[in-house]
Amino acid sequence: MTAKIVKGSSFSGAVGYMLSKEEKAEILKAEGVRIEPKELTAKSFELQASMNPNIKKPVWHISLNFPRQDKDKLTNDKMIKIAEAYLQKMDIRNTQYLIVRHHDRSHPHIHLCINRIDNEGKLISDKNEKYRSTKICRELTEKHGLYIAPGKENVNRERLIGYDKTKYEIYDAVKQAIPKSKTWSELEKQLKKDEVTFQFKMNGNTNKIQGIIFEKDDIKINGSKVDRNCSFSKIDREIKDNAYQALQEAERQAQQTGLAESAVETLSSLIAQLSIFTTPNSSHYDATLAEYIQALKARKWAAKNRIKIHRIR
Image 1 (cartoon, rainbow, N blue to C red):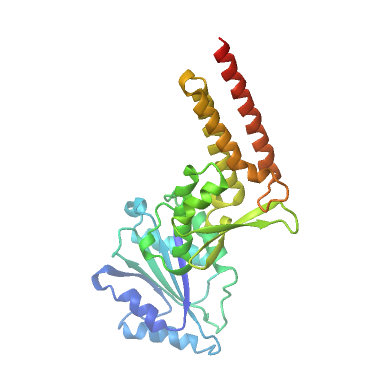
Image 2: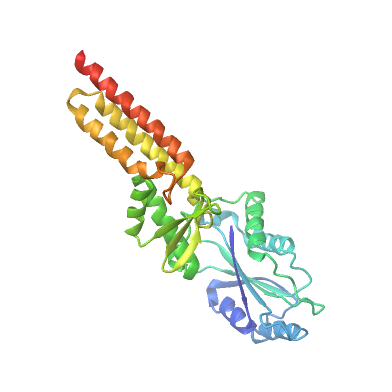
């Protein structure tokens, strides 16, 4: 379950969209507003909002979206129950709202039009609304036994725009590039194919890397905000694992007589690519990674010794 929150100034625009689907729009519940005739629905919202005319955006238009896997269990009554629980947890009380279910998509979803001016003319706070909403959606998903998608794979990319569209493009590019990268340099080359760049965020005036910032289409996003698996530490760990696996494969080849020389070349090439991170005055210097590379070097020499022993025999 996810929520998309939009604030606006036009109740007629929000209500018009929600009810414009004709046979594909189904009113589930209305609180404090008239639904017949439809022209009076927006008027009901506007009348209450006029109690606090200084608020320029009194409209909350929130859509609650559910995965296709939950379609059979989400009856209208169930959706009303979830929507009302969402409003309570968001501390949206004592105000008008309209809940409409749309049947125009493959995934179940409902739209809520809410008056930010409550029944007493007071403004309902929107402080940290997106953070609170994300947490509440997770709680309700678990409470009602709804499907939890693994990561961002089920998000409909075609409907995304602006910042969200760019964030998911970066996410997709990073997830495709990491398995192909044994070094940060290789990752950089892979990402450039998708017009994605990155820079490291340093810890004060030190050479210690504490984060990563991705950029595409002039939009910069911290790695952890792209996805928790796109933070510097997570990516760094995966790159190290890729390098280690490549080293193991090179050692395996080194044990085969005909491939010994090429295996040593593979090891040397790998260490050379990683060596930039072992130089303390490098802008990319990372002590942890430097220690890891030293371990790789030790394994390289061990592999060479095994090759020599093999030849003597």
